[in-house]
Length: 460
Ligand SMILES: *Cc1c(COP(=O)(O)O)cnc(C)c1O
Image (cartoon, rainbow, N blue to C red):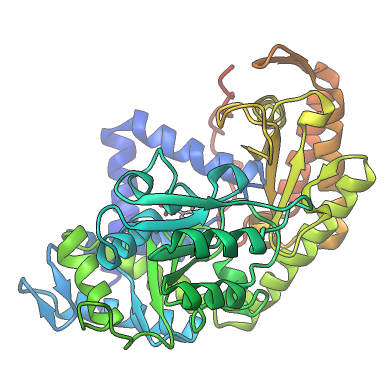
């Protein structure tokens, strides 16, 4: 063991920053305070543990190399090789995978890697429509996935569930080379086996993108696609409580041959590097290793159970306040609300809630008359609430806070709104009290002897 070099570097770095760059330091400090003191119900987010953040800030960030452990293009990689091997081993263990690539810089990059290595330009990709809850990288026209390839899109049935019959019909008609399943805003269980049967029938690769539900999959709270899909991808900062980044996982099909005769494993390794990426972020790989280690603990399993139980309770409470909960509930961490039926837009709901210290996302809903910057829906998630230690009992309060704001806000046009100051003040202090009662675990609290930086004021 060296004499606390790592600890001292982190501390010293923060002190140097405060001294030499107080403006930047102040912003970073205030951001940390914001996270501690606001009620985050953002389905696409979690809060990484300080030990994960420390890995990101470690000196592994200084290592330039390319390639994989034991086969790098640069010297000086003995220790980072061990770090990456650890991350790979933990990813395989957490997901029961045969193979894991921990280098993708993001979930989007992981999907690009899969598309660009398994398909040729112009090939047909069948993915969930962005407006139905799919992701940009599954064939949306705003993304390369919908421009370099030929997208075909499936949607939802009248209950708001994946239209499996319609998807099957589209697959038979268009013969895609690749089918994406997994979504960005879909609160129900995805039937991976049904997708695989269709993929096999039409001769397509099935890619399961579990970015939103990876923690539930690791904990056994949602069926795993790892041995069902040809390839599984995920981002690491949503339900894995890890750093920004992506993972590619292979199960039973790791040694399946592609048209070129190479295995999926070899094809995807070469696709991450050298085809699409250069030097890996080894600090981020270390942070992934750290976050992945947590997934196999009893504490994580218990939290995953609570993520689902709290989301179900939140949906039920909001429903009992008269809100329209899409699909009538949830099987995951996610609750989707239609606010358009109350005469609000998602944008106004998001801003009004943020002005009270409650952070949610505006979100398109099926048949949304508004574009993605305005929307008619709100997406809530319980990843951070569960991390804070909240349970089903606290969801009455969370739902009541959201309801109180949404019931009081008065829109004036698509953009502006009015919210009674007394309501705003009361909700803000209740939200703050809840955060104080359930602080982010292992995150230091503000030192009362030091001046507290000003709270951020949401832009008008
Ligand atoms: C968030 C998300 C991604 C993108 O992940 P990034 O790491 O933000 O690039 C991909 N697919 C789905 C389904 C997502 O929800």
